[in-house]
Length: 264
Image (tube, rainbow, N blue to C red; front, side):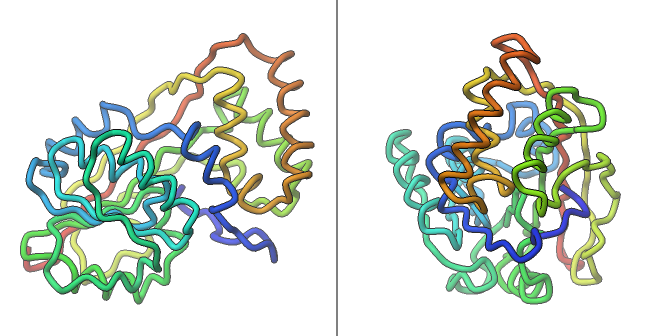
């Protein structure tokens, strides 16, 4: 999400703790997203793509399934272990590695696309922009994207956020206003905006999958102890049972910025 603080007080965020639920329950971007990207020249068969902060590889695996040559990197070893297992199950050949996005170890001009989904806020921006400039081949682009729920218009999201704050008052990613800027605030003269878009889509869930999706979030499994996660999840189960039908949808705002080097 745009404008979200990368830290929650003094809590240490470790996405490895959320990896199992992340692999099972965090939905990837919908088909409509990749159709829009294709119109802007991203996700074309044969493209060399590096997915930063890849997590369990939801974006990397989809690009690979479209015929792209994909690498993914994440600092959380647990996330990469899940990504490798999922890619193997899907018969996809992806070069996953553990490490910081700012120092991937890949040579210059290695990629046509560098993608970062839901993760740019965690990076050292100056180091990251320098790395992107080095790693992109001539004509290459940087894609940053998000798929974020809308608590100000979605009732179930608002109820869930209230419960998260009860169990983790330091959580700072709540009450997102839904504003997607035309130009990201970190963008500088090393990049030019080639395209941007955003739109809303209902994402289907069940009680079980929404509980898993929320466990696999920064405010819960990535920061709380296992006992605290279990306590939250039990209350969340009760909340959903009295608040919604077994199957429901959650409105998400999906956005993307496609940026190129000025000479591209």
